Length: 274
Image 1: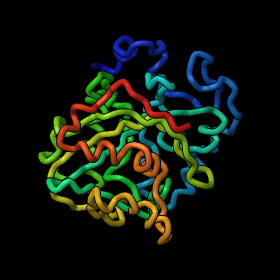
Image 2 (image 1 turned 120 degrees about the vertical axis):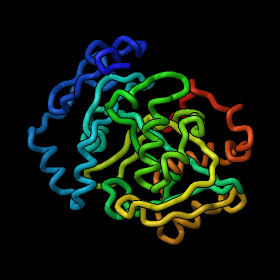
Image 3 (image 1 turned 90 degrees about the horizontal axis):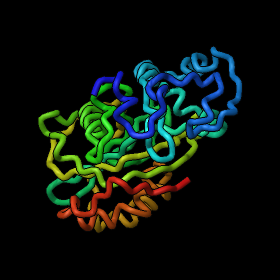
Image 4 (image 1 turned 45 degrees about the vertical axis):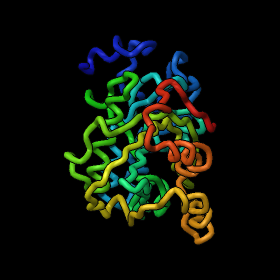
């Protein structure tokens, strides 16, 4: 699917769907986002970028994420920085597509990570195996029931964050279960408002974590998990809001059916926590 044809291939997408959204101007009334937007100087975004101390993370915030409406239809794209600006989430309702990978080993243990302190949002928080975003590139924009574009993005990021070799991450090993629509603030000027694709995979893999992304990793069993999140919080290690929501409401039910996970996948379902 060429980028030029994405307007035709995604049902309900506006003719302007694949252009970048200028967050300093009013957005179309046809989009999910309200047309009224707080006017900000054009230099605001660049000033915010300058506040990000880590040069690698500053560069990554320039990546273009996919903006979607409440039904997960693509309506445009914007930088990762703009997608995570609190003002765009709270005042403008900006919503972007994301994914959360849950990788289990052959013993059924879930791989968790503690995010590096260099991360812009939720630094030092415990979370699921890998969480990130499909980008405004042809291979990651494919919209179909199997979520091929999102799976390609997940393959890319698991390799980047955790050093898992690509040959250990075949696309067919990612199982798309459902989507989670949530909103959460990260303190200061940052936050999240995501349409999050939940991807399960079970595979023994080699790990070489990227210390710019990940502070540490560990495997947790299903038996140990019920008290795991509360123990983290009690010891002063916070948990990312998306992992907290999924962990409390959905994860254990799916985890118990790991051997037949494909049978409960529902590509049409969106769990909403907004």
